[in-house]
Structure formats: C-alpha cells, structure tokens
Length: 87
Image (cartoon, rainbow, N blue to C red; front, side, top):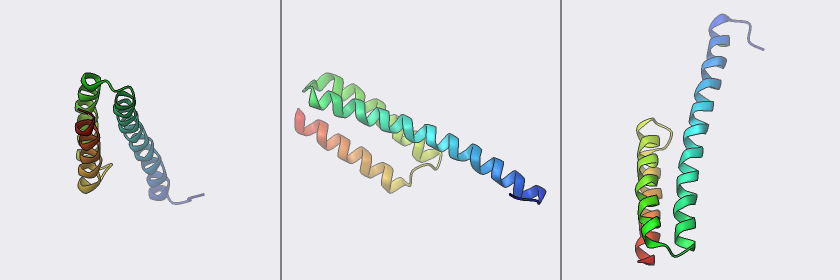
C-alpha cells in the first residue's frame, strides 16, 4: 500500500478513470452487439439505425481517449461493411 500522499491520490485517480473507461467500453460493446443482432435478424432498417448509434458511441470513446483513432476507424469500418453487405 502506498504511504506517500501523492501516490495515494494517484491510486484513487487511476481507479476512477479505469471505471469511467470501462463504462465507455461497455457502451461501445453494447452498441456493436445491437448492430450484430440486427444483421443476424436480417433487419436492414434496424441495422442502419443501430449502426448510426454505434458510430456515435465509438466516436465519443475516441474523443475521450478510450480508443485510439485507428481502432475507432477500424471498428466503424467493419460495422459499416457488415451492414452494407446485408443490404
């Protein structure tokens, strides 16, 4: 356990940021699962709507520094390709 005051603060700050990042990642995963579910159900309208929401969540995560910009682009690209193949 840390004895120095600044080290104790770093532990708290790290824990807080980790929890925030985990919540953001969870939202992204949920959005991606919704797109995948719509694709599996062959519902193109629902897939398009879910894709729009997923892109929004991924972009937010990238802006907040949870995802690298290339990771975000790759995720968006793969989802868009999957939705476009279905249509």
